[in-house]
Length: 215
Image 1 (cartoon, rainbow, N blue to C red):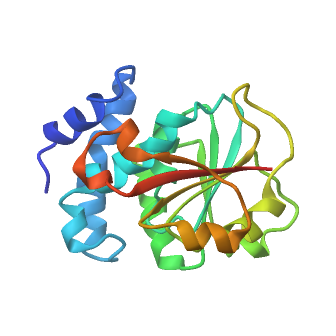
Image 2 (cartoon, rainbow, N blue to C red; image 1 turned 135 degrees about the vertical axis):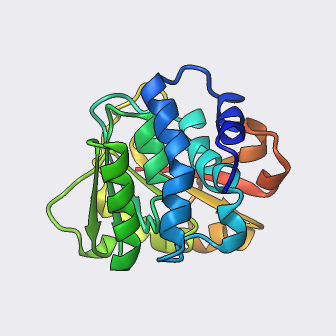
């Protein structure tokens, strides 16, 4: 298990205005995920040792780029063990997050994290995004779940077409890596692309990006 001080140092290196409750919630992520990962392998054995860098800070790159305002409702498609949804729910306690995944056992981990951290602004559902009916959200977030073309096909029908924040319209925000040239071409979209290394200059974020597609 990681030293509990070092992960918080990594996060507070880039963010300085957390409440004591938020810091404690981030601190608890390591023991919770380490314990559950022994039962349900939602994070690779290698990555669990770098949980805060590869998963928590990676997820928080969205928070560094987009300041979600209180009252927003955000859906995390294909959340797996809770990324990026869980770190974002800790970061934005006044924003509602709905985490969905098609694999039920992964959501057992999300449920445990929700209960142990007291994340009242987080809900979850065992479903596929394309099967969600009668609900709309301000933003869709996702991390390495599917090609951009598919993500947009699933996410666009779930997004309210409005401007809830001054600096950007509602839309899809996803985390991706590698050479995205062909994937973007196939999507016929023109996403706004932000290299994560521009936000967090850590070697692990080389060739990792935030893509934003407004409705």
